[in-house]
Length: 395
Length: 148
Image (cartoon, rainbow over all chains, first blue to last red):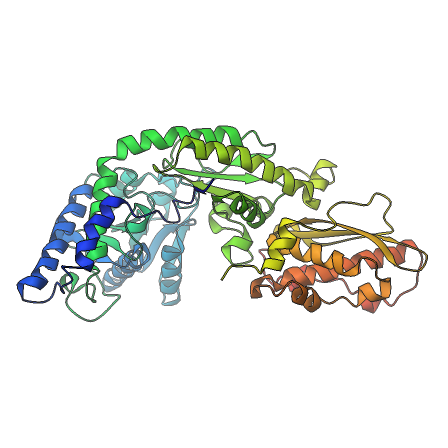
């Protein structure tokens, strides 16, 4: 059985998205910047997509900028707010310890340029505290950037409360909503969000297309210079087909959000219930504030990459925050941010499911994971020491 | 191209010599759980200083398991002196290569063998030059940073 359980990494392109994009790859391949009617047909597609995206997050179409993806949108939002702040002498940026690297690395770059960055604690439950934010705000704070939902552990942040606080203090608020868009309701007006990033391929659009929402009045700094596309704020001929697909996928995801959530939650809960039966396992992140489809757990005494390889052999696609899978020698910064010891974080597993998964697939996962954990523990000197009492259990 | 060679995947999927030896003549353990890999090797040595049996336990990624398995296979039936000549490069070569960031796994495998031999020498009162068994610095084996 093949089970794709890595929907937080990417998703398949839906039929609606594919149907929406195909005409712009074939018969309507014109350049939206061309004057003739053939080009203008592509321009109309962009306009329609802009209206659709704006509608689903309660923004104005003029506030929607199409980008190459979530990372570019995050980069542009943060750099823009930093440049705006600097003009007023404000060079303090606030974020959290467990943001995506698109945010953290952009902040680190700005830090080298002389900005000051405060990263808020996300506590053991993976949720930022409003009082921590309030305490971190300074007269020279130029930006607060907090993600909507964490990509690894799925915890949802108090976005509306953060938005209200920032608005009251006159501080721009950027929200990386890559994991939430299409999966949770977003209302940029009600939530007082000034800038927001999303990525098409997390909700069944193709890879390589994303959105930056920037509230009117937020002056954007170009990351890509060139032509006057996207009202001069993002040069480069538009990815018309991708943009059309993104709008169609967002529409489909939002229109079916309730039904999708109702389908996903019982599958997710079954994973939590069954996999929690594995001794010395731990669920990561608050379940109270959680995106529907993400399950993140740690299993003591084993290492994540070997777990993933064994799951792959059983047809299951999943991910882990172990050092070996992160490509570095440290385990995931997210798991460390919620206070997990290194040795525990190495044994993490993320399963992220979507509406295309079936209960039968979930049962396959529930049957396979305990067997693999047991197999790896049987050859693990760490587990051996834990069993003999020579090493203390951490979970 | 896949992350690992077919050889690595074979040794990961069907690791040779997994287990423990209760009456081992030498046991060596290297690595650190915080860094994400620990290898422990058990050797049985006969009167001719031949390694008649070898087992391993490994906590770690696919290449940590595969290099442990390959290293045990390469020295089983060899003399202690031959086992000490096992280099991490030889293990990597036997596995048809490892990704660059996984080379440290082969270093650990080589060190686990040496640690088991050193333990055998210690237990049997066999003299050796301590210089030949300078404890490997786990930091170094990991390229100098693993959050420690």
